[in-house]
Length: 201
Length: 397
Image 1 (tube, rainbow over the protein chains, first blue to last red):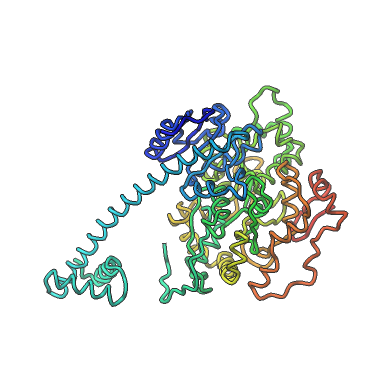
Image 2 (cartoon, each protein chain N blue to C red):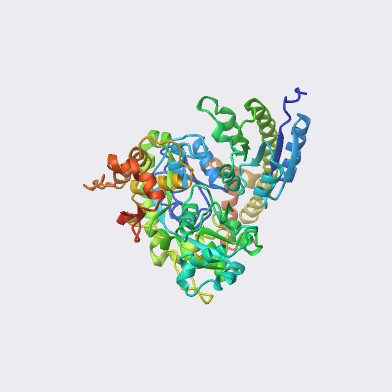
């Protein structure tokens, strides 16, 4: 466990992805930060920021509600401002890392920049972790779909060429090799051609 | 989505990543992709749908995107470091002119009717001024929304209010609401009115949620709305690719403005990859808005995409925008207005891309030394205004 930050930062977390928000919130609490609000629907985001006065707002970079926050810094100096404004040219790496991880942050003027960086790192790590989990899930899903496509194409070849399964598989593989395409793409082409010719029924 | 299946994809370089916001005026980017204009120019483009202007700005600044569909004021704000880290950005191609409008909810319209003798009172904001003057000092302020602090929507809304004698900081409250949420916010009474691009004005009228008072075109005349903005470092290192994209966009703009293409245009734009809406919603954005109330009149947003009058970057408009930023307390110290306008709105690259010879009077927009020192104040005080027909006719002094 890292040492608790000198001054307890209060953070508002805005994320439409409830699972990720829960992970990020827990990580922040574990690191000794106070998460004052977790919003999944940022309908009254401006009011919430005015009411709870967080030191920092962490928000998904893909949230359409970011532009609401962009306007706040103009209203009073105490309102959080986009973190990119604090990124000096020699010190923009943590901001870039945040953007790449899909984390966007708004910080109130005068908050210790070391604490901001530390908190940002916690958020970045969890966002990345969540992203990795999600891509893994998607890749498993797409592998399953690939298998279904290949099976269907094999079935069509077997019926059309009156051959057995290994032969159909070999034919599919050869086509893919000759055209330097993925098996799935070849399978998809075969299925659509056969469907066009009414051969899939 | 890929409607065309090219036989030979030319891959001369890495893909160029271009961001866009799902609005009607992203059409030239979508059409250049779907009708193959990018490929014909030998460029492999990946379009990336973005959720906010802030996201576009950050991703272009940190090279997650090479360029984007941008508000005309964005490359100026980024290059000056206004609201963000200072990052040189530029544009050599204006994608569209006009398209904005101011709409108010039914409840406010109802009230305004008691303060209006004619539609002129409504159109000019005089009725709104009368209403505000008669309100109790402790009444909750009327709330107007726009889409981004550094946008024509913000500046047009404030200019319109101010011309009616309304202080946009003290007499009303101005907030940001993303375009897709405008209708709901108005319907639920979270806001009393807004300034936004089409189709969000015509839709409010069609659905009976509000009344459109005035178009951006009526406030400023014809003015640039969206541009193809890029990271200047990227542009410098990828000049040929950059120029090819401008050529492709120019063709796409012609295609978009061709009336015979409209059905196909709407069907492509409505696709889930792009605006993700119904065809009906889009049709309204391209047609005249019918009057629905006693003080309403037919209106048109006059969105335009093609022709050198539209596409050529106008440094004079950059001067105008910097004065708007100054007027609404966004602009910091600035050394030379002429230099910024010239570096951010790159006419030379527009001519180069399209193989045109530069016009002789091309630097006429430059402010004299004397004018440069008084420019910001003169615009802020209303001594200099846009010509009623728009920026192509210059300024009225």
